[in-house]
Image 1 (cartoon, rainbow, N blue to C red):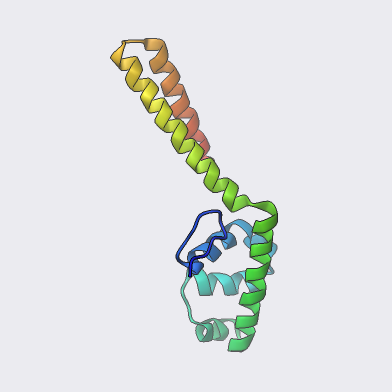
Image 2: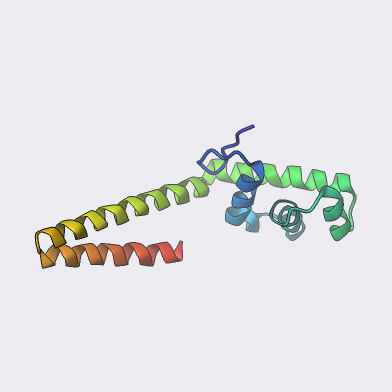
Length: 131
């Protein structure tokens, strides 16, 4: 089955839920967040998570289901994953345009174009570092 919780189609439900956990994990209780991390990020089984948390396997399953619903609801309202993915695509396009401008500047020996291209690339890189 194909899931799409973060704005991009993904074959793996675990990947999507792990990303949602990265974006919205602070909205969960500490126990819910830990269960999600152990199950989705650390790839522990329901039984292993139950043992780690000192609760039943069914308790883990119920916690995961509730947490998944919370994370999906947060994304459907806020769309942070979707916006983040769009921003990354836009920055990649901007970098590509800057590279084309730089190439054109070299081709026609235009120092001003080279300077603009370098400034754009520098700007894009600084933003990508904080994302």
